[in-house]
Image (cartoon, rainbow, N blue to C red; front, top):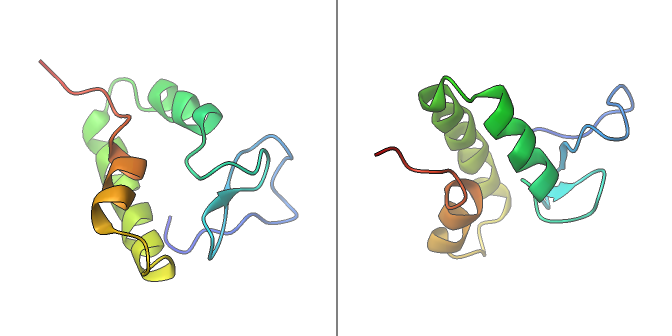
Length: 86
């Protein structure tokens, strides 16, 4: 998902990002919000590598949109919540 934007086709509880601010279109929190993080962990529970690729593409887009944000903060926002393997 690069340059994702909530569309009128998205259900109201989909928790997709509104760009360029990368704010959740459902709850208004920074994206990925807590609800979206839970959904992503559930969706990618057996394929964390694909979750990392997905979040990496989101981070790349968000980095361009949020260029004034510190890189470490964006990295933590997009990856800091993902459980690490053993």
